[in-house]
Amino acid sequence: MEQKYLIRTFGCQMNEHDSERIGGLLLSDGMSPTNDAADARVIVLNTCAIRENADNKLYGNLGHLKPLKDRRPDLKIVVAGCLAQKDQGLIQRKAPWVDVVIGTHALPNLLELLRRAEIEGPQMDVREYTETFPSALPAARADDVRAWVSVAVGCDNACTFCIVPLVRGPQRSRSIGEILAEVQDLASRGVTEVTLLGQNVNTYGRDLTVPGSARRPLFARLLREVDGVTGIRRIRFTSPHPHDFTSDVIDAMAGCEHVCEHIHFPLQSGSDRVLRAMRRSYRRERYLEWLARIRSAIPGVAVSTDIIVGFPGETERDFEDTLDVVGRATFDSAYTFQYSPRPGTRAATMEDQVPKDVVQERFDRLLTLQERVSLERNRAQVGRTFEVLVEGEGKRDGSTQARTRTNRIVHLAAPLQRGTFADVRVTAASAHHLTGEVVSVQEALVV
Ligand code: SAH
Ligand code: SF4
Ligand code: F3S
Image 1 (cartoon, rainbow, N blue to C red):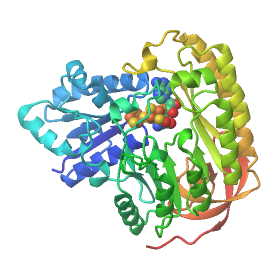
Image 2 (cartoon, protein in one colour):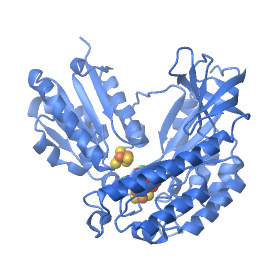
Image 3 (cartoon, rainbow, N blue to C red):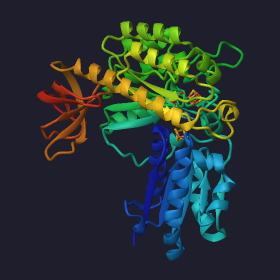
Image 4 (cartoon, rainbow, N blue to C red):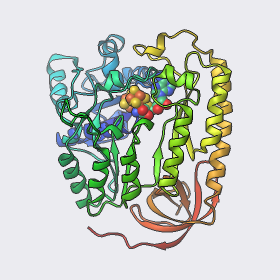
């Protein structure tokens, strides 16, 4: 009987992309995917360590899997991802029924570890350095129209709240040639949208330039090269750092036909005092000036952001500074987070941790403001016509979900096939999506 695998993914896009590679490895070993844990021979939990609730989710899931493992000892349970890298031996101490703990740098060894676990019992590989890019492994891609392409792994920054440099290591970039070969291959198989992935994606290539000379990122060049790949109609990237939106990157975004008019511009805080304590290199006025520059260089660009509420020492005054910047920046959307202390980071041991009820109250105020701004920004789109790419079925029968180049979700009443490009007129707006009607359907590209 064919053996099945199940992968649960808890983290960001890079984590999801790693899951595609894990799936690819298991497929190449003759297995097939299932959604049913009871059917699975291998269950992989691909974890995230960014906030505390991510930890809780892992141990909750492992608790649920214990009775299954007791009934079926041949089941193999794998913990992968950032929490595997961070908690290492702790996972098997807390949950001895875990067969394999595999860190972020060790993915290529998965099949070997599973084989060894069969014979020798529990295995762990949490090496500290990436030798093979996950992109070099086979992939079981979740989507045949849009694809993630890993361009760099790791992060050289040291934002004091963030666990990522500890679990993903320093930045290592892939060569432009390798990236282009992957994008060309995807395009030849009908993919029309690529999202370039890196923990600090717009410093791509800084580690590739000759040591000793000015170590410049090559991100602008990468955008131009990917823009030239025939068949790719949309290019996105995540996640960037405001500091690294240098003029050459903005010029490349403005000049490349296929680079979408959307930028993620993570603010984190609107208070200069807090930004300094976070070790974010920009300050509020500089951030707003730069945003204005981007908006004038790229007409119609949509801007999203990340904001943390309740960083240690954040006062009411600091928080009001955040509200002030949010009001002035008029983001199209924002991911808002309550600060979560991560053991091992600088901020976790800072004094003046903000009480939970204060964080919650500020968080609610921020959300209310941003919802209002998002709604206004979306309402301003009503009556306009945009090109969308159909991503799949909508919630209602016969409906479709599509996305603008500016990353806005559009609900359509018409049943259109995934991968279709269409022009739609926006008829209504809410804070998180638009509703539209189809003006014309572009002929689907046949590859
Ligand atoms: N590389 C990305 C960040 C990835 S983490 C960047 O530099 O923008 C995504 C977001 O999670 C961060 O932007 C931050 O807003 C949030 N985050 C990271 N660590 C956090 C923590 N300890 N508590 C709460 N939110 C956090
Ligand atoms: Fe974390 Fe992003 Fe800062 Fe890197 S740049 S340390 S990933 S928040
Ligand atoms: Fe989480 Fe790791 Fe991504 S900590 S946010 S899965 S890089």
